[in-house]
Length: 412
Image (cartoon, rainbow, N blue to C red; front, side, top):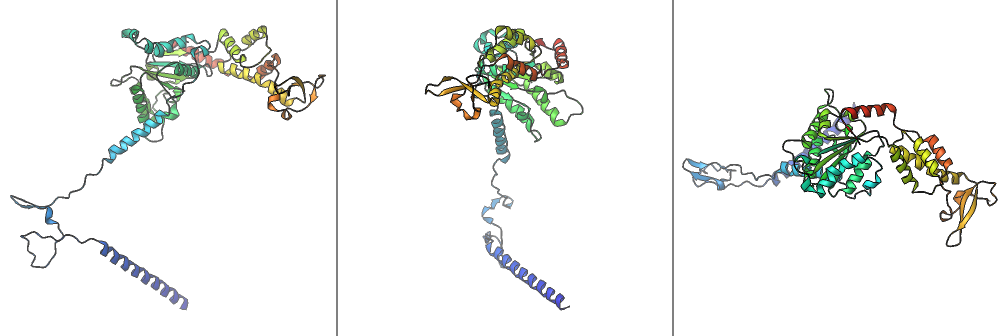
């Protein structure tokens, strides 16, 4: 019982302290309130001694008496307009980041084969800028070009050449640049993209992996995705949208997944097939020109035949893999021989077999970088690379692309 009384007294003491503190705060707040104006009107009865808290300095006489003052609130700044302008600036910053400022060092001559695709891009971009008087009437430039085909055939490389060869503004965007988690912002990004492109004509909008953004519409998809596709279609070919000097260039590996309305808006649909014999030979010779090799003309011709069914990317990987073989030999070598001397008189080493009379037992990491020289790429290096590198395109994918080309596209 004694313990309970002690607890009660402590609680009462705490409550009294809180009440005292609250009274101090109340008095402080009352003293801080400024006194209201007590100016009375000349006809007002003040005999009662009551004070008025109205400010009658703003009351104006009228034919019906005195007019009550209205709450004169200062006009607030246009927050919505300022917020809208700020959002537009943010969207423009996102799109500005997609502009290719430094043009890639890729020329039309660097693209092996694909003459039809290069000719179509020149008709749509290069020639109208250089000879605008020729592209009038029926010869209006193409507004949309779709590059489709198996992966690794040079679609993106063509876009790089187009960006390098044109004097206009090149926008390179993907689905991640245009899609947002906020409702309505994706449509605004697309609208801002086309708005900025029209302001910077001649301009090219390149959309890689187009199918990830504009796949076929269905009843199962959500409303946000449908609005994005609708906004893109309207911006690309709408009644109020000017498309002069603007080209939309798309690339996809699965053109049959595109929405029919999207497919119609791309006036030129160019098939980028696997490289033919001449293209494969040009690719192999171009890659071999970058490194020392000991391949004969007969073996290069044989290599061209054995890479049938390889894409451009597969051939590049094959040649690069073969070029790494001399480095692997040097890493595994236990003996090196001197094949010459530097300008400073230091020996230059090259890996060799242990039975070589000039061989010296030494490891690669013990040789300074300037004193190590790799052997040229040989036939054996390519044979090992051919065993590891296989085509990445299946026959089923090729059949789908050929069927789509027969129905909707043209050969590149």
